[in-house]
Length: 94
Image (cartoon, rainbow, N blue to C red):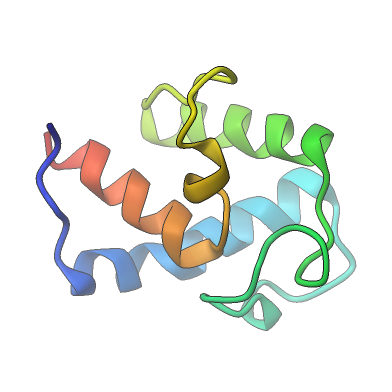
């Protein structure tokens, strides 16, 4: 089981992850416009399952962590920028 990351380590990752998302998906917004707790899907950023695959690929390359498509926690992991940052930080602290 992974150790819970500090809130500071998660906060430090958020701008970097937001920039990765904007770059990977060629979004027409500034990375700073992505709210940390807003949903990435639906009414939030409006991403779809193909977008998740793109994000997972760049996250895996950048942070050398595995994001598997059959992971039942993916809905939680990709629910918001903060949730994704928390997951990445927890995997990096192992």
